[in-house]
Structures are given as structure tokens and as C-alpha cells.
Length: 124
Image (cartoon, rainbow, N blue to C red):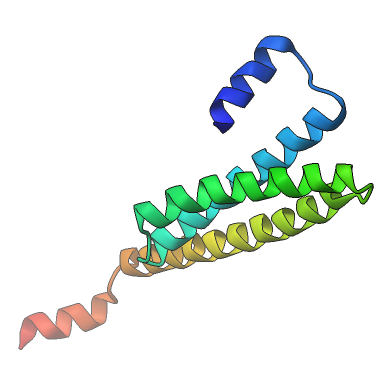
């Protein structure tokens, strides 16, 4: 659904007004879900059914909240965008920590063993 909306947006050029806001919160929801999927994969908890239903649910809820906000004259778009942006940054921070931990572990395994320790072990 999001891919179709993006393809349609690229074909028509820039989207302005309320449809632009709806597409923006939908994209934020999609990015949040993708990063959450990467994070859960790194943690070993990824489930495909949870990812797919979460993706569709997040996009629809974000879209509906932005739409509802327009109808009752409350700018819920900003609140939705803020929440998804915070979640995106939290997921990115966790992914970064996993990457840094993996890198430092890899570098620690690559360090050469002390030559005096290996020479005494060969003599015994």
C-alpha cells in the first residue's frame, strides 16, 4: 500500500496539503516498523507475522490519526510525527549499539596473541 502511494506520488510530482501529511506519517510509520523489524532480528525475536501486521497497522493508525486530527481541527499530525520520530531514533540507537558491540568483539578476536605466551606454550 505504501509502495503504491509512493509510486503514485513520484509519478504526479510533489504532493501538497493534507495528502502530503498523510503520506508523510505513513512513511514515518513504515520506517519505524522496518527499523523495529531490524532491531528485533538483531535481538533474535523477529517474527514475520508480527512484522507484517505491525507494518499495516502502524501505517493505517498513523494515517487515521492524521485524518481524524484534520476533521476535528487538532493538529494530530505533529503528535504522530513526533512519536514515530522518537521511536525511529530509539531503534537506530539500539541498532547502532548492536553494530558497535559486534565490531568491537570482532576487533578483539583479531588481536594477535602475545608472542611470549605462545612461545612458552610451544616449549611445554
